[in-house]
Amino acid sequence: MIALIGNLSRDLLPGQPPRTGGGPFHGARALQQLRVPARVIARCAEVDREALLPPLVKLGTPTRYVHGESTNTFSFSYDGDVRTMSIDALGDVWHPDAIPKLPSGRWVHVAPLARGEFPVETIAALAQRRRVSFDGQGLVRVPEIGPLRLDDDFDREILRHIWVLKLADEEAEVLGDPAALGVREVLVTHGSRGSTIYYGGTSEYVPAHLIGTDPTGAGDAFATAYIVGRNAGFSPTGAARRATAVVASMLSR
Figure 1 (cartoon, rainbow, N blue to C red):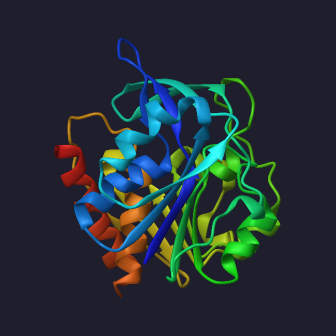
Figure 2: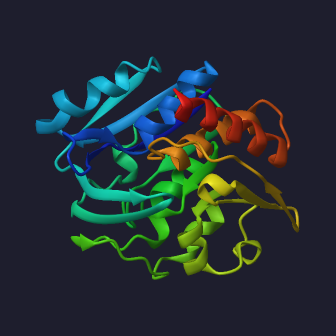
Figure 3: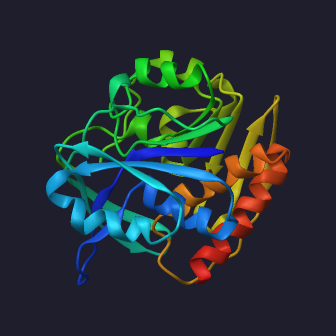
């Protein structure tokens, strides 16, 4: 049983109505392709629940809503794989007592949208019973309103509790050598150019192909599909190849 935890977001794109975003939503898009036992735990402000939760529920993975006081809101646009993004509002912080009881299982993917949403003590508590996969946005995205900024001013203690760390190229640039982070498996995604997997003192490149559709959520879907593969017994490289195929299928739809 895979668990997926994070805040939902309100995503604002030029010329489009607001839409649901965030790791729980885009990870559930991958789970819809994979059809494996999973649970999604999602949070947003109660006032946004009616707008943001139904698109997630319609994807078919059993979902539990956690009451929130605020909702992450982002404005962004794309030029190919290059994204310009601003933070309009920050979401809730998940302290350990905010995490509901999870179903039995080996893996949990934690999908923060900015640094501080999942403090070290929360990740440590999750890691007592499961292998934790973590999105690097929760390390390097500065939690402030305005144009998105990245820096490495985070507590390194959190890395001790993470089994898989997913980074986009720009996040990896901030953190430096992925092999030196002390995390067992690091996934660096390169957009339409594929990904590089660091594990066991080695690295392997997994190619991908450009798909001319909106790439929003591809990283969340990749990370979710990756841990599904690892849970099924795939090697890190095999899981990354499978995740690449899942994301391609998802974006093509």
